[in-house]
Image (cartoon, rainbow, N blue to C red; front, side):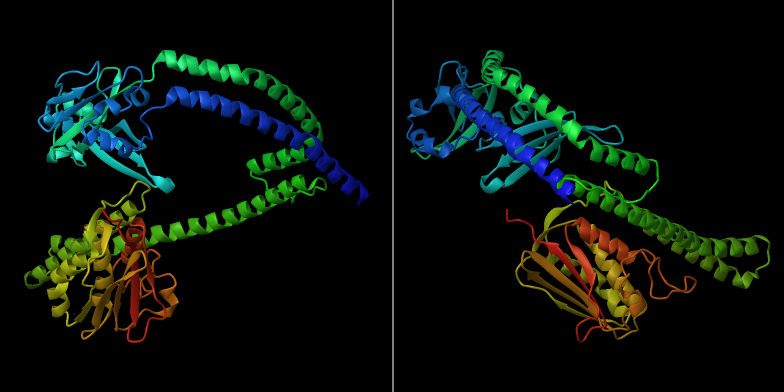
Length: 533
């Protein structure tokens, strides 16, 4: 025990006397050097990025354009130009062109905002179609970021997003202005304002690119300030590394051998190491990792068994209607069916083929939702209106089935980012189960309300309810109310699909079990509310 304490104390003393002293000295030296270098850097790099244009607005509105700090914000080669709504030059500094653009082209110049950056990238779809994506990123206070995206094809036709004036195509000049990719030595920004005369003006700011001479000067500053520091730093690091290599070789060697065994697929005995508590913790963490890997392997084997069961379930669901179709078709082909029963057999063949097509479509949709690249096509919509439209289209089917419908929706809209078709599929899957598994006279209830920062939709009925033995696994694939696969209705994927759609929208769906009084089955779907425009 005394040796154990001595080893731990020696390592701690080393860290205290050498490593912490080394770290403190390096931190102070680096802080001083980087502070001085950063001050010099900022003096050279003061520019338009991060500038609040509001403090220059009064001078612009009054027409005192000479007070705008052109050189400091736009560089030595930068200049400004003030144009009216017709594109005519009202004021310009040396170097600015006369009326270079039409009003439509000026509208395509990106409007300047503080801490705003534009990125242009090329994207290619799986079928080889290429697109140009223009992303406008704005960073606001408290690290709040906003992003605007526009997507163009190779001919500058707008595929996604919005353009000034509702345009759907840009000519070469307008596209170069919109994306800031035009030739030249400047980046062009537009700052719209209203003058004291009540007329609209645009301040065009031509910011000079960071040239090679500036870059070489700043590079020399950094190397001058840190070269001597790096030499001392590297020497001290080398001494520290060689010393630590001797002291920690034993636990690291032990850990390395255990990892090699683990990589080879062998899970050996847990590591037994006594020494500095930091290395003891590493060995304990490795032991925990090894235990988790063993548990993960057990779960993988379990999932593999579930996968095999799923494949067997799918094969069974497809085989049953195919067997009926083959048998009936063979009987008709061999002339074994009387003429008066032939139509009945053909109707059965059609019904089974229709059911088979439905199963295949359901399996396809389930696999599509499970794909990592799946993403719903979201747009800002009123969830209340979406529920009304769905129930209006479904009302006749519900009424003919002998079911009652009770609906309670808020009077104020609840806007969410929704894929209307996908959310409609969720409604269909839940309502379809209610119609399929409950007797006539059952009441289906839709209750929508706002819950905090989200919308909460309850879909419930007072029918026969869900058996308790499957309630916990109701959203698992191929789970149905009747465990006999020969007699059940549906593929057992409907609620699994509903769950995946809700999660893909940033929400969730849950079965409330046991349900509230008055209901036998109760689902609650939550969706986040969209941000205000």
